[in-house]
Amino acid sequence: MTINTDDASAPKVIGQKVMRPRQQVEDTIREAILSGELKSGELLPPEAELARQFNVSRTTLREALRVLTSQHLITKVPGARGGNFVQSVDYQSIGAAVIGAVDNLMALGNIEFDEVADVRQQLEVPSVRLAAAQRSDEQLAELTKIVERQKTASVDDPEVADLDRQFHTLIAIASGNRVLAALVAALHHATEPVHYLDLSPEVGRKTVKQHQAILRSIAEGDGDAGEKAIVEHLTYLRKHIAAGSTS
Image (cartoon, rainbow, N blue to C red; front, top):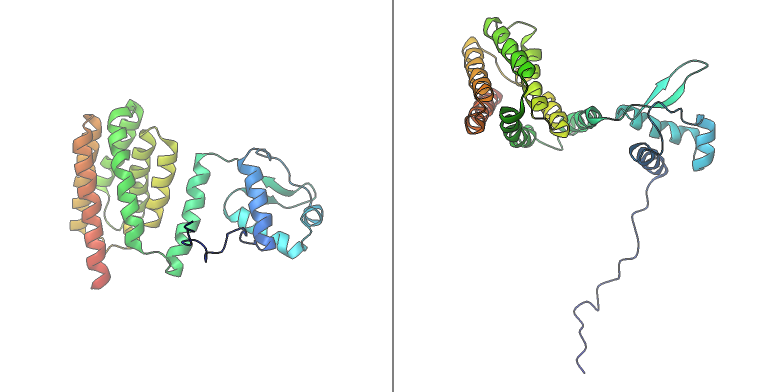
C-alpha cells in the first residue's frame, strides 16, 4: 500500500486569528449596523452598559466607538438626551469610509499616489461610458454649466478645485451606479490634482479643453469617445503631477 505523505508534515489549520478586545467590539457593532440589526437613527445602549455587555473597559469601548465615528457609522451627540446614534448608512457612507482609509494609508506611506490614481482611472472609464448612455438632460445641463464656469475661472480662483470635483463626481452620479459614484468621488478626493499640480494657465486651459471633450462625448452619447477623452485627461494630469514632483 502506498501512503501519500505529501501533506503529512503540514499542520492542520484549526485556529483563527484572535482579535483584540477593541477590534472585536468595533467589528461586532459595525456588523450590526451594516446588517440592519441596528437601525439608522437608533440610540446605542449607554457606554457603561455596552462595556458591561462586551466585558471590556470603558477606555477600550470608547476607542472602538471613535473608530466607528471616524467611519461615519455612528455619531456622538452631547447633552442629557445625547449618546451614540447610528448614522444613516447609504451609498455615500462607502465614499466617506474610503476617503478616510485612503487618506490615512497615503499619509503613512503604505500606498502610493500612483496606485490610487491607477484605480481612479480604471473606475472613471466605465463611469463616463455609463454617463454617455444614461445621463439625464438635467445632469447634462449641470455639467455644461460647470465647464462654462471653468472656462472663465483663473487658475488661482478658489473655486477651481471644487469645480473639478463637481465635474468628475457628477459624471459618476450620471452613470446611474451609486457605488461607482461613491468610489469615484472618494478617489478623486485623494488624488485632487490642484493639491499636487503646479497649476499654470497653460495646464488650466488644456484641462478645460479636455473637460469639454468629455462633456461633448456624454452629450452625444458616444461611450468610445468618452473613454478616449477621460483616459487622455487623466494621463495628462498624472504626467504633469509626476513632472512637478521631480522638479
